[in-house]
Length: 175
Image (cartoon, rainbow, N blue to C red; front, side, top):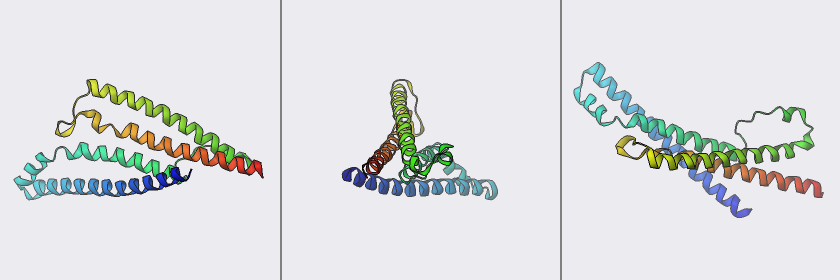
């Protein structure tokens, strides 16, 4: 479990840095687009419009970065136990049952993420066969690799949570 915890910690650091990098990239690209549009619209500078024409890829790229940020953020929040939780049982169950509830929920979420991972892999395979291209003539499946990667990250985090809860339950029953 120590090796998994170390890997989880290293992965969280990488995810954190990627989130910072991608967020800055999104802000920078969006700022440059807005600035160029303003220069063309209000200052009537033709070079700004020409430059915007060369940056037509930045809109779809920014939307793709939003998807990456969403999955990376969801993975980090799941690691910290701060992901969205919608359940009524936590308010109805007695305190001693909460670890079991956490184990069941983490296991169910891991199963759902595993299914979604498989579905996304199949989708990527279909995109590889039939898909078109996105900006810079890159195959569209490359832009969608975040889907299985994101669900794999979430699966990993929910599995760790399930194992931790299982260990906690075993400790409580042993004592």
